[in-house]
Image 1 (tube, rainbow, N blue to C red):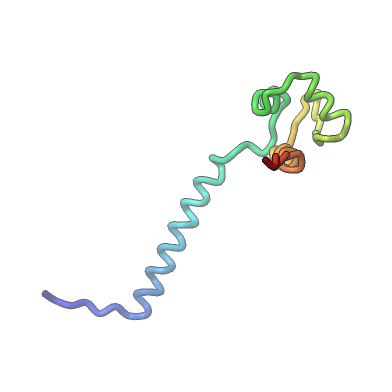
Image 2 (spheres, helix red, strand yellow):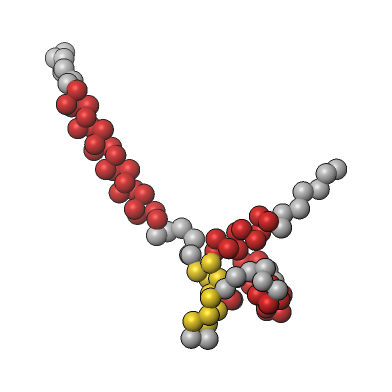
Length: 92
């Protein structure tokens, strides 16, 4: 069986190919994650809350929002932050 000698150049080239493949995979999956901005209906569905509750969260400043042309948008990161800040741990 013939033997192959692997040089440091071969390893460097392999490393660069693997890194490029990882970058390609990450680029493909970046767009497939959660949407960054959600409309009111999406937020109500996600949190299982009523329109009135969502309005209260806006009015009391709990949940920041942006209004563009009459459409209200919520940043998904803000929703996640509010959920984390209001997490309740029961000590039983």
